[in-house]
Image (cartoon, rainbow, N blue to C red; front, side):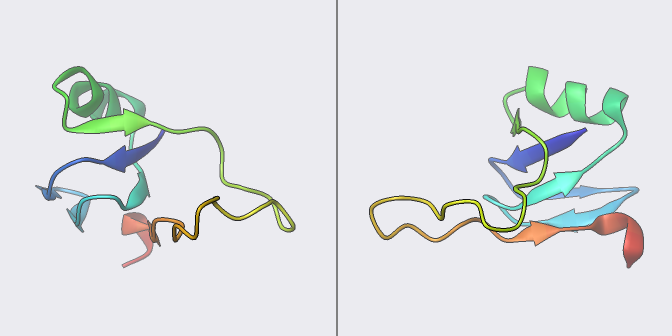
Length: 67
């Protein structure tokens, strides 16, 4: 399950900074979302999708499983 972290995260899967999007096992992701530490996000944007509006930068995506 893909989540966007609201806080610093450190766990068996690695570490992650706030505003980064990571893939986690569904059970672990649900605990973080239910606790308010992360928000669930849709699937990865496909090539050619529009960038965020108002000059915002897209959050950096982190794949902790490939470290």
